[in-house]
Length: 190
Length: 190
Image (cartoon, rainbow over all chains, first blue to last red; front, top):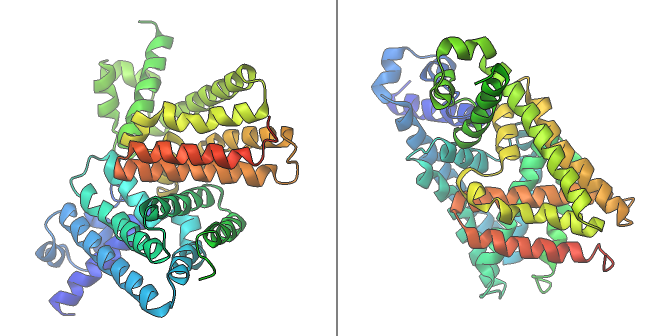
């Protein structure tokens, strides 16, 4: 395996482990064992867990931006783009039921740890916030665009939290339906 | 200090540390140092961190039940009781901005740790869920009472998450206003 692909594999594995078990709980050893490489090879790429976290956040930022770009180009109207956002609760429901929202649970944990990477992790929320704000602006809600974006982000966070706590798939579906109904009042049939 | 009051102090201190820094991150040593007692005295009361967690969850369950009972007896109408619930976002906003919701962040962490205490921690959510459901039933929404209770719980969780991520007090106030408006449609002027 090339050096770059080993590095990418470490980052992708750490991304999953941080999401599934939390950053604090996931040790260097957990990641090295999961990747199945020698400690020497591992340390060649990363000296500290914080370096891995920084790489994981960068990976997530890149993946999130790519997803938002895809939604933007695939949907014809801003309303349909916002619908794509709402529907990730359904698309990712299996993981959400088990582990909650990957963004919200990471920022919550880093906040409690007073971790210096918190600001970078919060950029994940910011990507969604700014993108949603732009869609609401395009829908004509210039004054309230940011308020609507934050409201929708909070609603989706709340759904992920409760669905995960109660392991309740039906709850996700019922709330997603309500979010689509909520959106209708701002779409002017777009 | 009596044995009982030492034990109570350990539990209350652990409760705060778990909330502020997370369960996994808080060590036996952190708690003992904060309580300022000898390790021998500490171990007399608790042998493992899981025993402390169980006591912390019991304390939170008792405190939550006492708060719900107080809201019940202090407010004359079910609508006013639900308003008391919504207003905890304002009452606790300083802590929420720093550390998020104490219930949501604990259950999220225990879920990722696959911790056996998760079911007990989820009872904290259940206390709120059942209490809110009863208020909505009293308001006449017998069929949708649980759905409305879960919706409100999710909304409040989402507000706590986002307010904490963006350290945004104004956002809490703006969403609390919207929650009161949302409630109006179910109150029949009660």
